[in-house]
Image (cartoon, helix red, strand yellow):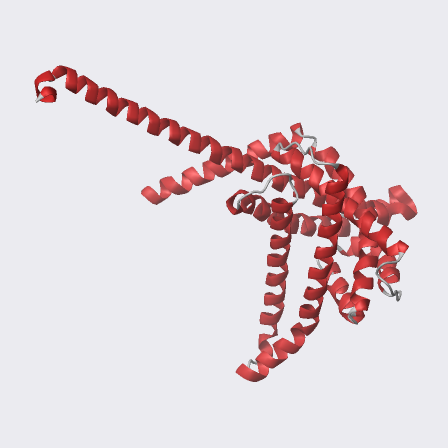
Amino acid sequence: MVWRKRVWRSLRIGATILWRAIVHFIDDGGATQAGSIAFTALFALFPFLIFLTTLAGEFGQEEAARRFVELSLEGLPAEVVSAIRPAIDQVVNVRRTGLMTVSILVAVWTASSGIEALRTALNYAYGIEDSRSWWWLRLQSIVFTVVMSIAILVLMVVVVAGPFIWHFVEELFKVPASWGWLYTGVRYLLAVLLLYAVVALLYQWLPNRRLRGYEILPGAAVTVVTWLITASLFSLYLQNLGRFSVTYGSLGGIVVTLTFFYLSAAIFIFGAEVNGAWRRDVAARLRAQRAARIERRKARRAALQSLAQDNPGSTSG
């Protein structure tokens, strides 16, 4: 049947793209870049939280910032959360004032280093050379960090208002109390969609080339699905088999956190490689279609010329 052939062809193309992405991930040194991103992400995490909580304090949203951080930690393995929670609590619960202090500016600069690490990895994955000056790239990363912080601040307010909105919906539509699972399901669905949107925006805006929507959506989907599966499996591994404290002692929590960041960075890079493989496959198919059209035109032209030579009288008449 026709639909079976189409499904099989789509699966074959998808498998080919995934295989090419794996090959490019290895050839581009994705594992090494993931280590760099993991260290930079851990290094930039707390300065980013400092700037974020300070920005929230300026708008009187300290409680919203704490609530948002709590919800964000829910998606991480429990062992990773237990390792970084003390430091995060210390950062979030300290009252700060003034956005233009030296410490806050240093925090923004440090947090933007994480964006720079992601940009470098994406340019490698897409095969793009970035010849722009370093100060312009750093300025873009700082602006991206500030804009992302403002977006998160708006999201904080929405997250905090979520229970009140649900209560209003319950009262308005007389939703049974047994339907509480619906609110939980919608909340997790929105979290997944938000993660997908953030990953897609990073894939589109960070590289030194503006990509179309269809060029980034496959990799973003692969990244989100793979990350969710990996986070669940990593949590199960730590609960049943992982005993990092036996090998690393008191540093076990830090090693667990870095390992999780490393896996997340590797998945992020692999998603970009999927986008790169997808772009190359689409470009190759377009070139093949263009070449086929040219060949058909040549064949028709040759056939017309042959017909004209065989019937010279009809041409002259």
